[in-house]
Length: 295
Figure 1 (cartoon, rainbow, N blue to C red):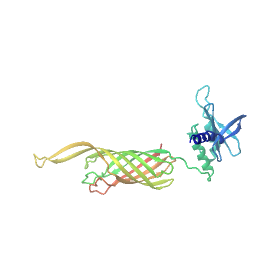
Figure 2 (tube, rainbow, N blue to C red):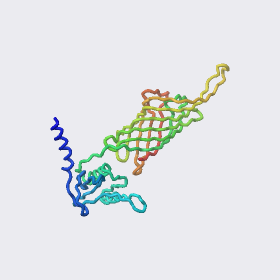
Figure 3 (cartoon, rainbow, N blue to C red):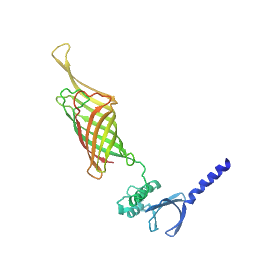
Figure 4 (cartoon, one colour):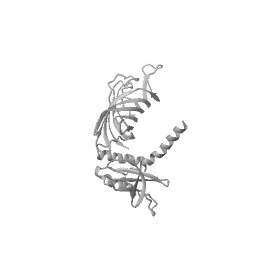
């Protein structure tokens, strides 16, 4: 058993060395590991505890990615970004957000190689991204007693989190919406909602999706009138306020239409029905138009 462990440890200790090759870069002979092979190769190694990274092009030339400090301003000059942009500009990629780390460089070079060579096998790791949106519309508050079926304006904001790869159809959202009162409907509310969204049509320029709002927390203000039991025929009017935490599972529909590289017009029809909250008798009216953008 000890002999087996010794052989295993020995083989593991030498395995990185097998991936290293000797290169001459600017007159300096270096042992480098090949991280990625494609139209652009990513090479690297550590020297005296410092990471150094290199790019090899198809013609075999090698350039080092450096980030030197300006002696006058004491700021890093990020020359590596200029080098990457020059090497990848033919496919419109930008290295402005690339860090001089193995993970960040690996993602960027993999992206370039897969873009410039369709046979290059690469699937990017799932990364969480987010959108922020604002919206406004009309609602008849279908889950609130509204005898005259009055519609009132509402407005709000939403924060959405989604993935950019396999799970791009799925997202979670947190929204805040405020509905105003009307002369014939003395009820206003501010509601926080947490939900899930699935895009069953998901194109580059538009998507159509279904929403499920799992949890809501509502602050409300209302004016109620009732007969005075001590003076029949006279009404008593009171202003009331309160808050409710519910798990209603409210369903809705929506669509995002891309209008800029970073922005979308949104259309929404919410509060269609709920599993654990009853409709108060009116056909649901809850339409909104908004704008959202990628953060």
